[in-house]
View 1 (cartoon, rainbow, N blue to C red):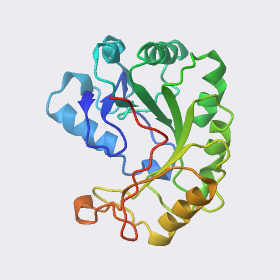
View 2 (cartoon, rainbow, N blue to C red):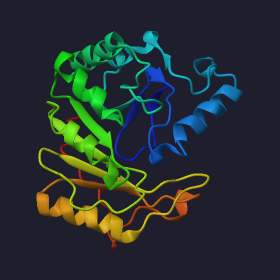
View 3 (cartoon, one colour):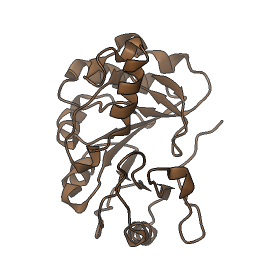
Length: 239
């Protein structure tokens, strides 16, 4: 639900909402759904509804109790802008993030239309980073919506990357993450797709983070691209 994580581009996760529904091909082998069903079978009370969207208001103020400055991935087990999450609850999440200024919060969504719609009503703070998932060029509309949202850092997650992503609109984008799909049924990612995004980022001066090659056993494939690891960030937290 909350705590440290092995996700390479963040440090902690915070899940005031769990559960989601599929909206595009990147959701096909959702790791969060797989994990949620496992937790349900283990009897975890937070997942008694498995992957049905569930609010956890008792966890809203948890980041305020974390003293050490951290990068926090918000809703690693859901999508904050899912239509089943009430507007007021989303506002409460943003209010907590704005108060917890010792942390950086990374909010990632596939529901960019709702993000754009609600953005004018949500508290703004420099420690809230806003991002969208883009698995193929078909979903560039998500980037276009993100570009209209006021945020100190706007980022794109191309994970799982399922096809070439050329001529990516990078104006107003501050960070790009790329990763291959992992786990059962993982679909392959081609090297040229990753190189293309890296090169686009380098030309545009946008930090590039290569998370993993992925695969059924992702640890076998690592995260080295052309002899290098790419861990670029917009900026780092001050410890």
